[in-house]
Length: 321
Image 1 (cartoon, rainbow, N blue to C red):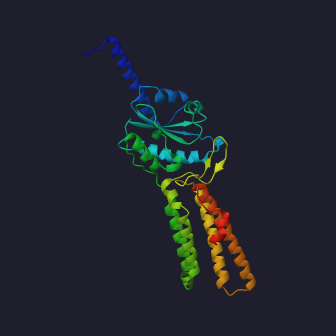
Image 2: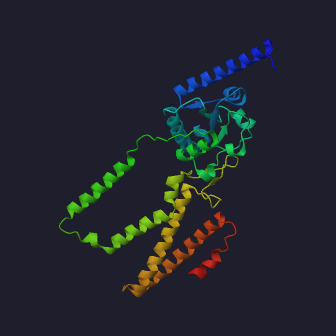
């Protein structure tokens, strides 16, 4: 039969008292700010040091202007949306807290964790040390609040329904476009032949196809960063090195390259079918071939950078053309 002596009871009471103080302090901070800002001392006391019966999801970032980390600011906005959704939900408890460590306020924490890039999201479980799966795969999943919420649910079993503040930019832009279209139709109400112009509809269809095939919907769903800046070298990457992810800048580049190839093909078709002067048709033909060859080769280069082992190079463009 096991008996507690006075020293064991005293240690247990101290343990519970210290844990209660930590939880109370974390709840107080969370009531004032959904994302708790931490420096080295707070991190060591409330995250690293036992006892702790709560999980902490921390964003390690560099928000100071001199760091020039645009991705950090974008990720911070999404992290704030996630933390606010949890803080002001009816299911809010002390099971999980959201915190932030800025490099300029806690560089010792970065050194302690051997961390050399930002932003980075880490989950510190209530028991044990963080595992590999407790590091969020930012380059694969993106930093959208919805993607972060799914990851938090996997690590903590806490379901967070992301609630975003109302954004009136989309409805206002749609209303403005409808007003412009309605105004133009009213001004030309006696001559609506432009509505039956095949070139107008063809151009509109091409723009829609180019936008959709460049990956804009993937960006909207996954919320990737615009580009990636290597914190050690300062080099900015606009093309993601994996076929499983992409940057926003990458989709813009692909859109422009596809548009250039499309323009070249249109010029070739016009040069072959139009009745204009033969000299102008030759110029259109040369320009069209040049656009197709150059920008299709650039697309091949992007594919080779993302799909390692892609067999085609610049010289194969001649075969395709």
